[in-house]
Length: 638
Image (cartoon, rainbow, N blue to C red; front, side, top):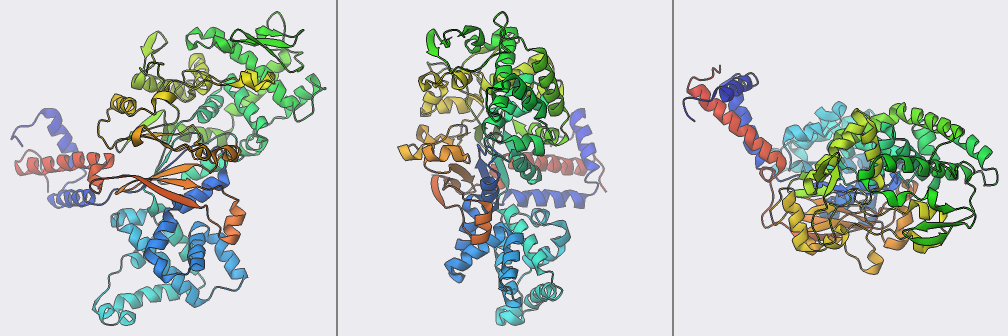
C-alpha cells in the first residue's frame, strides 16, 4: 500500500476502524474471514410453481427435496432398519405429530430418547461441518442454543479413546440428555434438534415463481417463506397478478377473484385475507338469476374483467394488446365472435350489463362492487404483509452464484434476437427490458400511479411479458366452446431456449460467461410421460416447474422437479405425487424422489467461489488495507 491514500479511501478506512478499533480485533476478523472462505459452499434448494399447494410444499420443505433422507441413509443407514429409517425421517419432518403418536402408542422409553437424540446429534454434527460455529449456532432455536452447542461440538478426549463410555465429555453428553429425560423435557430437545437439522441442510432457498393461485393455501405457503432463514423469489405471472391486485389494479383484482372462483379457492380471500365476496355474490344473484349460484359470481367478475381490460388496453396502446378487445366483436344475435379474423360460435351466456353502444363501460352496480373489492384488497393487513415480503425478497430475475434465475422467459423474436419493446417512449430489450419491468412493478406498489398499475396487468398476461410468455386466450376459454379457439401460441423464446448457443447468449446478456453457468427456469410443466426432459440446450438451461399443482399431474406423469446445488455439483430431484400431510405424519410415507446428477464441478466449490465469498474477499482486503494503514501511521488503532 502506498504511504499516501486518496482522501475518500482514507476516510473509509478511518470509519472502518470504528468497528475494529484494535489490532487484535482486526487480525481476528481477517483470520475469521480467511477461514470462512475455505469452507465448502452451502447447499442451495430451487423450487418453482408451488401454486398454493401448501401440503406438498410443506413436505418438500421438511424433507429438503429428499436431502434429509439421503443424509440419514448415508450417515446412519448401517445402524438402522428400513422401518427405523422411515421413523427417524418422519420424526425430523414432523417432530410434534410423530412424538404425539409414539407417546400414544406407548413406544417411547428412556432408551428410545437416548438413541434418537444420539442419531439426531450425529446428523446435526455432520451438517455443521460446512459452517462456522457461529453460523451453526444461529440455526439453533434461541432457548436451546446453549445445550445444542454443547452437544454438537464436544470433542472426544483420552477417556473416550480408551473407553467410550467413560470419557469425560461423553459422560457430560449423557448427563445432559439424562437430565432432559428426568425432567420430561426431551421432546423439546428433539424438536430443537430437528429444527437445526432442517436449517443446516439447506443454506439458501430459491423460489422461481408462482406461489399463488390454483391450490388452496398460498397464504400458508407465504407464512412459511417469511420464516425461512435465507430465501429469494423470482416473480411468476400469478405472483404479479396478486401483487397488482394488492397495489390497487382493478383489472388484476378481477383476475385474482376470477381465478379463486374458478379453482374453488374462495377461502384464501375470505378467511385468509379477509376479503369478502358477499357483495359480488348478491350482485351476481340479482343480475344473473338464470345461472347457478356457484356459476353466477364467476360470470359476473369475468364480464367486469373484460370491460376493465378493454379500458386498460385503449389507454395503453404501447402494450399492443388490441387483439384482446373482443366484447365489441360479439354478435349477440347470431351468437358468434370474431377472433383473429375467424368467426367462432359462443355459448349462450347472459350479458345484460354489456351495452351495445359502449360494451367496455361499467354499470353503476358493477362499479360499486369493484370499489368494495378494491378497498378490501388495499386494506387487508395480512395480504399486504405477504405482498411486501414478495417485493422485499423478490425480483424479476436474479443472478446468483453464477446462475441466472427467472420464472418465465426473455422475450425473443422468431429469428432468435431479443425482442425490443418501447415503453414510456423508450426502447428496451434483453436485460434492460427485465430491469425496466422490475422497476415499474415496484412503482406500482410503492407509488400506485395509473400506468404502473396497468403495467401489472400487462405483466400478468401480455403477449411479450417476460413472466407470461404466451398469448392468453381467456375470452375464448370463457365464451367459446370449441377448444380449437383456445390455443395460446408461445413466445419464440420457448423454441430458442433449446439451443445451446442461444442460452449462452442469454447468459452473456446478464454478464455470465462461465461454462458452468446455467439458466434456472420455471413456468412450464415437464411432460415426463411423453419423454420430455427438464434439461434444455445441452444442460445450459434447467426447467424446474415444481409440478405441485395437482391438476397438472395427470398430464405430466410426476409431481415435478426441484433442484439441489451443493459444493460438488447440481442435481435434479423428480418427485412423485404427494398424498397428504395427515398420511405422511401418520404412516411415515414420504414423497418418493429420484436424484439425477447432471453437472459435477471439476473441483469442489467453496465459499470463496460464491457471491458471498466475493463480498467477503473484498471485505478482507479492506481490513488488510486498514492494518497496513495503521502500521504506516495513517490510521490510529489501539
